[in-house]
Length: 111
Image 1: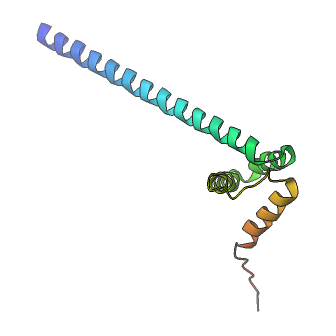
Image 2 (image 1 turned 90 degrees about the vertical axis):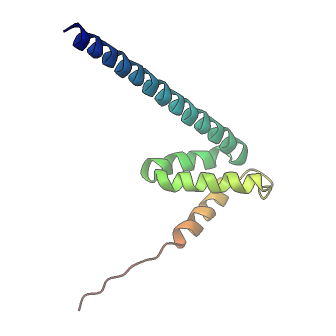
């Protein structure tokens, strides 16, 4: 019986170690994600005016995927040196209209 108990105890220790390792990895991933978000916020502060950032924040409530895509595009433009000054709210509106205008519109007619 002592061999079985010893095996159970070893297995329990292994499981505890695995759980601790998974928790550490999860914490590291969360920390990396938070750091990336902080960098993205900092970049948006440099690229956009406060009004434009407010517009994106409001839009994020309804279309978070679209805002993520726009932010990545803006960051890429800034990295390539194509953003000369801060993007205003009106410029952001125009950019949003261009992006939305690219989508196909489907009309269904009944006969």
